[in-house]
Image 1 (tube, rainbow, N blue to C red):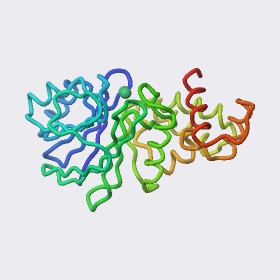
Image 2: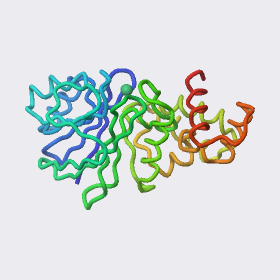
Image 3: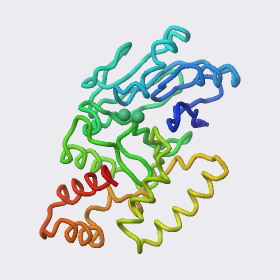
Length: 260
Ligand code: ZN
Ligand code: FE
């Protein structure tokens, strides 16, 4: 069986670590030290690093970990990331030997130009797993630093096509502040209210709000709800326009959240 552990880093990053009791894979090690400590404590060998995009809070520990463990580093072809052994783009399949896993690469430009996500389909040893970096958060999505709203919308549509039971592992603990925005947009959404209470309780006790899953996000995440009539109404009123396309609704939600 595969265990998945969040290693907290900086203020609100999670470095996700997968292991089978012997070998480990980490995603987006923004720093090396907490990863090294965890590996030593659990007596694990780091065999693979996966990187979603070039930002320093996702790549800062790659060099040191690679030197120490001689592990293989996989990352995006269209983002400037150093120390990669292999670069990947949308549609690539990556097969790991250390922990036998087949990983699908999903190209999700928007937050950065070359951002990719790593999807692992369910097997006897694991559920459907999505490591999405800074593209999707629980209740939110990444800021548009390098891409357009239209690109990000298309990227999120790829996530929406995954199975509902896909577990989602974003790289930041932004959930509570995202949900405050979501509740402003959809004050009557009961699923959202319930989820907000559950997350608040977890955070009070210092437990991560993550992973989340696609079914929950479809019900509570405004950035995946641009086709809901409630959300469309709110955005049409806000813009004093009608017949908006899904991309236009999405773009305004993103803009509103940026200034919220
Ligand atoms: Zn980022
Ligand atoms: Fe980040």
